[in-house]
Image (cartoon, rainbow, N blue to C red; front, side, top):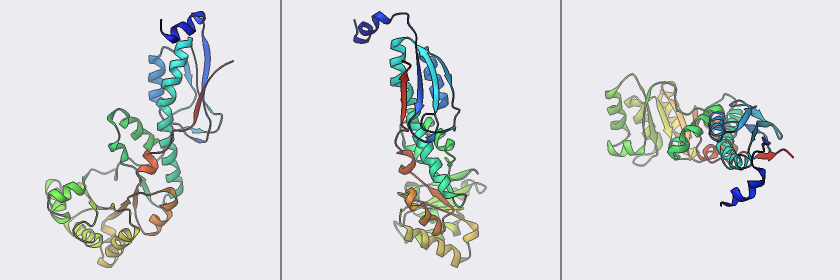
Length: 265
């Protein structure tokens, strides 16, 4: 006989009520996964918070009822289904609030996480109000490896433009072969519409913005910045002139929102 089976034998046939609440302020995400897993556990339940709902300490997210073993399994599964997505949504919402419409906040780091959680974290980023793509228009993104394989920024952008001149070409600039300001000018001349300065160095961002202004092509491109951006560093990115900020770890590695599941006494 398994341990739980032995412990809960005297409770056979009894139902126990429980609730899941937030212990801190945040944004709720993971509603669809929560419902799916609660159904799979065979619980009777009501979800009281919708996707994107603001949470305060004590906010009730779900009330449920089930047998003793079902309740214990619920604690193991349900908190995990919503804790991480809610933490990510909360971090994304904080960046969007700080940005105040002065810069577009995106997070493409969801593409780098394990496939089994990718869709949940992608949804969480969107729930927090940040973009999951660098642009909403059809686009081609050329990262550093495309640039290396195709012989540099200029040839890479030109090749992508030849494939589909209607799509926006976004290219990652890292200053590997030329200074970032030079790469930016080359990319713009070749037809890129979004220049991603992905060095984490504000001097590179400022150099690209200055090159665009002095070269007379600032209005032709959007300039994005990425690389270790934190909430405290966001103002400097805005002041340097970026149009888009791609936040990685500060959103995707956000801690789980502190949640609690308690059986009614």
